Structures are given as C-alpha cells and as structure tokens.
Image (cartoon, rainbow over all chains, first blue to last red; front, side, top):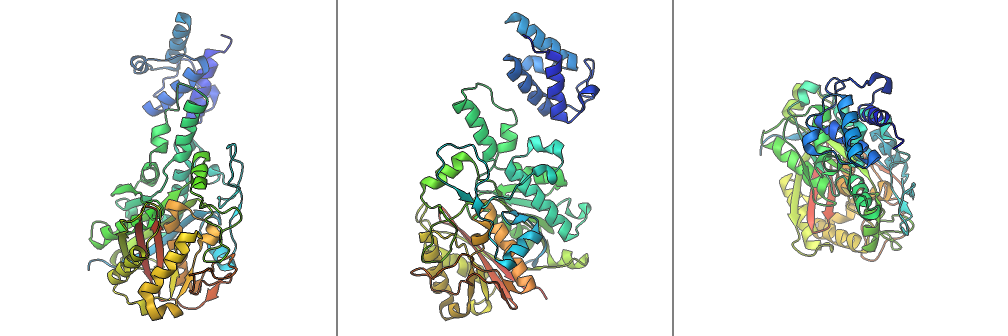
Length: 80
Length: 402
C-alpha cells in the first residue's frame, strides 16, 4: 500500500470541514476540528473507499483524534 | 372567515435566471429560457432541450461549506427563500416562528440517482453516507428551516405538478386560522437527471423543439427546474409592521379528479376553479387574467380551455389566459410557485405576460392566450392554475391590494 494513510485522512477531513490541511495534526481532536457525527461518517466513508476497508460501527464511536483514524486504518490494513 | 392573507415577499430561481428581477424582465420581454441541455452524463438520451437554470453555480449564492449537504433542489429552495425573506423586509426575529411549506414533485433525485448509479452501474458496495439527508423529499424544507432558523411548522407537500399550489394553500390555511402570522411557501424541483429525463421521455409528452402552449402545432412540454417561493403574511401582521404588500392571496381551491393517473379532466379542473372563486368570494366576471397550467401537451391545453369555458361561460370572451411555461418551462413541483410569482407581479404592476412561441390556435383552444406580446392594463383579480398527474388540482386567486 503506497498511499500515505495520514495524508488521505487529513485530506478527507479538510474537504469535509473546508479546512486548510496544515491546520490538521495527528493529535488534533476531532471535536476541536468541528467534526460532528455526520461529518465523521462521511470522512470514514472517504477513507474506507480509498483503502477498501470497513471500519466497524463499534470502532467509530471510539475515534477521538485524527491519529485514532490513522491507526485504526493501519491496523485494518495489517490484518488484511 | 379568519385572517386575510397578503403576499409580502417573492423569490425565484428558474431558466429565466436567479432572482425575481431577471424573471420579471423575461416575462415582460417574452424571452424564453428554453435551450439545448447543458452537459449531462446519460447515454442514448433523446431529450435535447430543457429550461435549465443557465450556467448555475451554487457557490455563487450559498456558503461553500454547506454544499456537500445540499441537493440541487435544496439549493434552489434556499436561494429563493433567502430572496423572498429579504424582499419581505421581515427580521430574523419576525420569521423565527414562521411556517415553511415547500412543495416538491421529485425530491433530491440528483442525490438518489448518483447513489443508484454507484451501486447498480459501477457495482460498488458502499454508497455516500449523506444520501438520505440530502436526497429525502423533505430535505429542502429542512434546509430552509436549518439555514434560516425557522422554527414554526415546516414540512414538504408533494402532489406532482400541483405541489406548489397545495403547499401555498396549506400555508394560507395556517395563516387564516391564526396558527402563524408568517409563512414561507412555494416549491422546488431539479429534474434534470438521466433517470427522470428518460422516464419523462417514455411518457411521450416531451417536445423535441420548443414549448408552444395552446398552439395548433404544439409538440409537448419542456421540462424546467428551479424554485418559486413567496412570503405570505396575515394582513394584520403586515400592516402592523408597515410592510410593502404586493397583493392579497384572496383564496384557493383544491380538488381531485378520482379519474385517471395521467389524463386530465374538464370537470375536475372546472370544479377546482369554481371552488377557488367561491373561497375567494369572487364571481367569474371579477377575473381578468388566468396564469394557465398550459403545459403544451395535447391533453392539457384542450382540457384546460374547456374547463375555463365551463366556469366562465360568457365572461370567457373578455378573459386573458397565458402560459408562462412557454418561457420558464415546466418546473414540476416548482411550477405553481414560479407561476404565482408571475401572477403576483402581473396584478401588482398591471401587465399580462404572454404565451410565447404561439403560432395559431389549436383545435379546441379558443380563448385569448395573449400570444407572443406582453399586454399592459390594470388587473384586479387573477388566478393561477395547477393540474397535476393523478388528477390533483390546486387553483390560487390573487387580488390587487388597496
């Protein structure tokens, strides 16, 4: 997998929230970025499409930071 | 009979442009917004013309951050609502508890069809998570409430091509009964999707050249899109705040044919016009102008003419009847809203918009259709007709306000 997971996640958040990618860090809290639950499922959808993985609903509720999404995808890809 | 209802704000998005100003100019000039279709991804499409909002870019009118949540039909509704509210001069506080009743015949079909294409054509397993909130038929009404902070009764009304008429009548009922002082009402539709174009084409009612209502060589309807939204207010509320009043919504009639799913009915249409006159306490002699349903299909134009003759009898001779669909196309659930805006301008400013593209009267079409040229003169009372598929009829009466 050559795609940079963090770059894809940051880009999905930036698009959804109309933010500058530079303002989104690995440790940024989703709540602080203004990501609502509807935003979160849209961002997760973009990331799922990019990596062809499925993030389970139970995991979705645990996501608090940008890094949580990146790590979650990393784990799913490792298990593939 | 309860509160009198007045119209204090107008908003429109149509093939004639974004805003009431270009809409009004086109009605006066008799300019049609029917053109070759703008780019559409649809193989084997036989429909080549339409009345689309020209070169529409939502970001020119709406906050870009909102756009991912807005189907095209919601975009139109929001733009027209904002215009109508600004025009009314109401403050945010004054419309905070207003009603907003938004008609739509189709709902968010662009969103739905994109999802179905992804699923059934591309064979993907996942679809966009905003499909439901963007595509639901009530999405436009919801977005009007969300973005304008309107917290009164808000919902959608759907009755195909009469959706706007029924929505406006519903809003008027609420004002008449004292439930609300202010209501935003009208309709919106965005039917230029591959699936809808092909489906309309298969009904064999779409014209290949242009829209010629009531003419002998008429060749069918031309699909349109947009939104027509009006601000209705109790006369008491409007006067108390010193509002500029366009006209009175004097009454409305609603009835159903219980006949056929597509064929119109003379008796049904006539009964609805009669009910409207009765509700507005008008006689046929009081009416000078009818903004017709006038789709330019074979069935509608003859039926509507016969219905008008049945109600107006000897008064039909002095009645002007025109179809502004010849200019803005048939915008389905938005049609009645756009046409009421046209009717209100007509009464307020004293002009009758023409039926453009008129050649010679069709068989069974023997009224004064105001062919091709705008006509000036004072109008005291005008009606706006909507006769939908499924025999669902709504007629609205507008009276000059003194």
